[in-house]
Image (cartoon, rainbow, N blue to C red; front, side):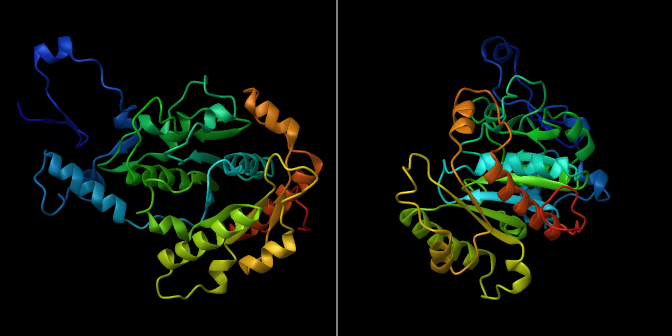
Length: 334
């Protein structure tokens, strides 16, 4: 039998009675689809995508392409990424979101690291009820940001949309974009842990968001960072007009590698800035107690005094980039 069109514009394949008795339940499920998204026909006057028949899987694919090509408002989106995994980008994203939230800026934290994920596990809220990224499927329309926000677990006052790739199938890149767009409309800032952009390379407009790149302060880490920065710049700005306004929304955070003894092998901030030809906004040192508590699954506590000051300085700059000139608890005068 052909697929049955749903009232929302989605599709629900009709299975035979034999299939329903023998087939195991699908791994991926849609969480309250009617609450999270509406048919593009209802939003855009009922128009059907060109080249696709209504009620067919071709319409799903065509709509997915159109959603992916839509420009996303990134003015209040903060991307935290890194060249390699394991340098502390996820931890930095969470601490920054908590810092901004404590300053009165309503934030939401999104885990868009489709390969690693597990931000809810890192923060100790994996057993909290709520939706995860792999459970949300909205390829045909616009997600309701308020409805999605109500379904998210909360960590230290910050709603969290986490990604658990070992539990559910990863979403498509345009579905992640739709979630970010929806949340950006209902929150002052969306902090996105992007990892290494695995599976998200086609969302080039997100590269125009406020970007925080975490760099390991070693010779190899800096070499990788320089090559990556050049390739990303060519991708987001192919004609070479990387102006001052764009640079004001890009920040580098140096991360001291774990396992070093008395800073041996750690490149100085001045040398790193000269090599990369850009400023190092903040330098985060290793915190043995924080690392051990994370590894034990005890969640993420407050950083030590030195790192707290570095995070506050970074948060000041993010607030200014967001247009939030008033700083309540930062290091700069209001």
